[in-house]
Image (tube, rainbow, N blue to C red):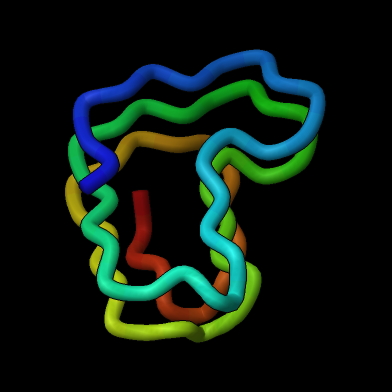
Length: 66
């Protein structure tokens, strides 16, 4: 569970799940102004859920809109 975090101004990515990361719930986070992507999922490893996050940019086909 990755929940209720504020992630800003990192040199790389805000919240990142690698391709081997599974069974995670990422919810109610704010990730903005990071150097790469604010939310990134390196591959479509599942099941992961992404819900009610606020972000500026994102990556990964399985990420819902922020």
